[in-house]
Length: 120
Image 1 (tube, one colour):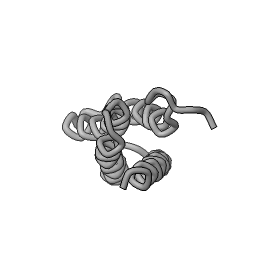
Image 2 (cartoon, one colour):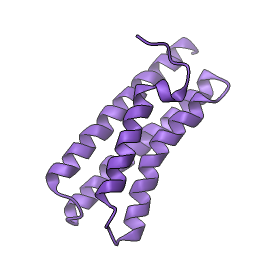
Image 3 (tube, helix red, strand yellow):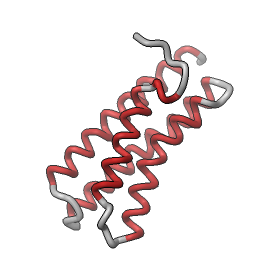
Image 4 (cartoon, one colour):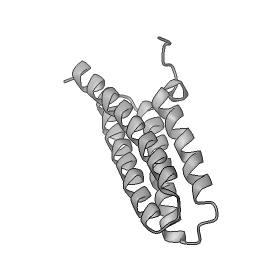
């Protein structure tokens, strides 16, 4: 296991970065600007809150930012249901992105648990 020295070393940040690219690609031509902005902001929030929390001074602060990132992953998953229902994306694409968001959320949850166990 490699030592994590920067947020870029975190697997969850790397996966969130990939998810951001996928979300932006999926909705690049979407003319529903409110929807597009909301799902893009939620995806970016996962990545950025992970990074911002990592740079904070305490594990408690990091865990708090990870809580926000995990919530944003749920928002992305939820919005893909809307995207599928409105035929903005195929069911297959929606399910792939929802699975990716679940994987990211699971990794975030594990790190939150570790941080809180380390510093109860």
